[in-house]
Length: 200
Image (cartoon, rainbow, N blue to C red; front, side, top):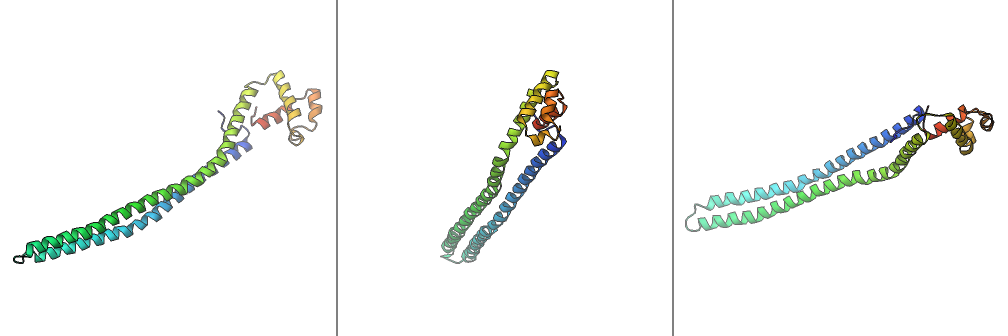
């Protein structure tokens, strides 16, 4: 599999495009992490509510300890206060814990979506053409082969003369059809190889 053309200018352009896509993916990942961290900071609110629940329970426990030594009703009153603190504070703590989990889930989800959706669009628009380029380069390298025999040079010259635009041909030869008729194949072969992304 050929990843890049042999021609330096074309190779540089292809590598630059690949690098740009990679940089964009890294930037999207960084953005996803930033969104995650920003949303995750909201988890401090339910955490503080949970701390308030613990404080409420601690207050009821302290009150129960204070009245626990009272004669006759002290033990029952202390137990009732502790139970009330456990119910009220425990319920607040449970709600806060559930809220913190929801915020963390939302942070993870938004961070992933912030990365995955744009990355999927970017890759869906870039990869098909990039894969087609690699297949074209690989097929051209196999078709041309490692050695250019005289017959193969003649075939490549005909392919260039009949298949490439005049603008591209005249970058390599002033008279493409005259060169083909006269058997001067160098310019035509160079144009065909350039079109295939190969160099000899």
